[in-house]
Length: 370
Image (cartoon, rainbow, N blue to C red):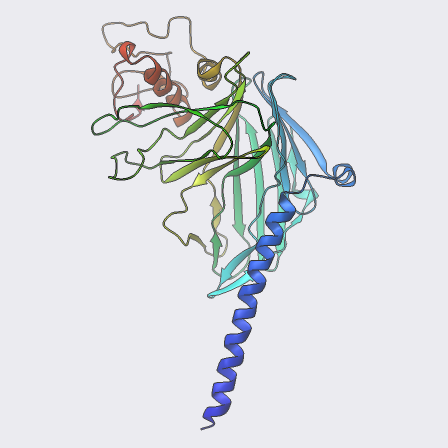
């Protein structure tokens, strides 16, 4: 047996794998660097730019050959937020234990746009994958929803790395004052604060986590209701909010560096490494997020999340004091919610956190048919 030849082959294979891993790290760094570059005039001319809107928000979206982008979010000229970060599509997947690069290209013939939906479709031929970048208007009012779908069209099992639901970097003047409003979940003994109103100054770095259960872990921050509400504390108190419609393990992060406000929403990547198995023909979807704009501070955000009638605290003999609009579902304390989605429940929690003496709110919301 030629042990020296076997040893040389092992060394060569090990060296090849090391070079491949180094190349993959370089590709990831270059991809992130490219994503941070603003669109040039030529790129803007080549990109397909479309808009979606409700009476409360308008978003502008662009599809370039390599990646899509949320261009801006606005509630009008006085409340406009411009994003300078392109979507970072997965740069590689794992097949048979080997990291394989992915080259995405826009497929204009598969894209769909109308007044209620925008779908930009990107394809990788080897491995054969289809990625859909989806934005939807659910009603004439309120926020707009977004998710990403990846379909495995190959004949092999593929492991997909962490894919965030949405990441963006809004341009903000370095001296502009901002606040971040968020609310802890209930369960166990309430904390001393509960409702948070953070000053988002230079160097601000925050992450909020949410899961199916809300019991606090010693040494860790309490779980949050999965929504961030960011606004200017002066003037009309204009701003934006972003939340996650998902009851599993998720996280929201917010960071301010120089003239950028960076946020990431999606699944909680910890503990890592994070991979999702996709069988041939399988589909992975990120948790749906929603994005909205408002004025009037947290109170204004609440009315954009879900409009309520003129007497939302009206009571009768069959419900507790937290009765809201008539609807198809109610919480375990009688609060009617329409439609029965997590986003609609968030406004109840936010209002309860601000005016706790007016509400009898449970620590968990369980929906059942009326």
